[in-house]
Length: 550
Image (cartoon, rainbow, N blue to C red):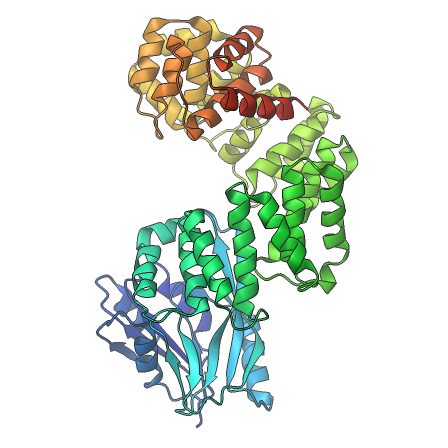
């Protein structure tokens, strides 16, 4: 065959991401085959801009059948399988292609590393290896309707790993919710009649992504029981995800027992060590946690990550920043926060922590210069984002810095007005804030609240401070999502009530801001309101407030 590499894809309604994928491989692969399974958007037109090998295929609830149909159209010596929500680094891909062409290989199936971007903004990642590259000699094809695997017709698979990274954005929360991937995957997985251990692992993953951790635990345990070999890659990942689930459901001792059994078995895997350190940190076992995270950083060249690169460097620095801050070790805390932010400058909470920490030891002028030179200078930083970072601080001096900067045309007129009103509030000039609101319409107030600069929490605190029935009615009529009606009844009517977990979080946030404002009247109100809650909730809030004051 003259062609070395064919990229095969199956797609449906991928107009938002397909262009990015195809642009990343344009001109550096021999052919691109796109199989469309029923798009109703502009997907096929985008595909035709990059290749003339675009084919229609009737979807049969079977990924393997669709992938094998795509492979039947390929003429390259090797087939690389990609999805529309994936892309490659072009320079690295050229090196990969050159190595593939020049090396003699005994393998006929290769694993490549998939880097999955997670969360809302993709700032965190997880890793896994997929068998995506295989010899196009007619003997290898996909099997399984979902989470498909490659098989040789005579069971002569020779697998290996090859140096290629594929970046995947399909697990970002907004995309998962939009495409209902879990619903589709659960249907296909549950339809498998004779399930193997790996099927239960995949079922656990779907419930994990839905945050139904109890069901995920049940399926993970079933998958582990049915494993054929503990050293299969999926088994190690199952154990790591099981530990996560147990931790999220407050079963840390059970999670620690699994870690203890895995640390020697998988001594070079960082995930088990990292999760142990994380649990120690959550239990305020600072010294034990610090020792683990420092060990990871000092030995990261000898360790490897199964689920996330972040466990090797980025997250250890983040936790060490928090731990050293707890211990009152200023220089180490600043150093680790700075190193974390050098790796992930999108973490606003950690920017706020670093600025707050610096504010305790530096003058207002020094703090201003630091923010100008090290925060606002970042390409990803905006003025509005900086304002919200400052307001997230637990230090009133930092919050009041919103009045120092010349925002010029970088904020809208409504955002500028919100900054002015917020600064009055932070100065405890409550009467002036009330006059501002009273002089304007309800539309004005709603516009302020929409900026999230002067926000609903500020309005609640203001209402408690002035004790005005008109404002109590106003706040109660504002649609707040999730609903906090029980909390408002507690605050405004002194009704004994049971709060949801979200309402407890809002109550705690309000209490913390009252402390930050150094408003003794508001602090006394929250102290009284806390006494109306259940003993269990009182204890949770007291612990959070105690930690906040440390």
